[in-house]
Length: 181
Image (cartoon, rainbow, N blue to C red):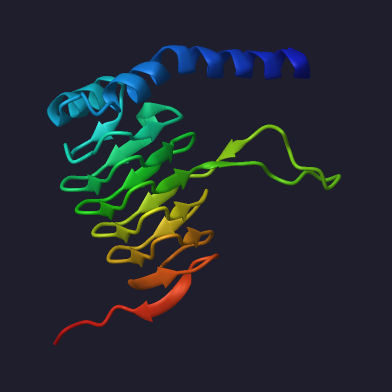
């Protein structure tokens, strides 16, 4: 298949997903009129491994539902955006503020210095008991350890391996978690 044919096929797949699964997931299940138990059942029906009913209205998912895993007792506030082009794993007992964005698609730089028009996926893993503040962004390939706090508005561009508070653009560790003795 030619490069043009591959691009066309990719665009057709994206459009078909948007008109079918995307419309059902984002238009129907993400609606404020959808009761949370039915929303949970719908996400599971489309292949997501969701173990919590605490997902508020407005969640937007753009990617393969089979790449999405959300742990027990995790809470996603209103209007979060998840892009599971590559796997997104969100641990147990996490808290996401409104409009948190998790992105997995990346456009690499080519040998000639241009940016590829074809994206590649990089998995995102978020540990247990992670709190993510409103409008924070978690970018492709990031791993966040358990017991991390991501400040509101932070942009996480690299791993957060130490439990503590990460803030800023790009996010950096501003305070390590202290262990009570």
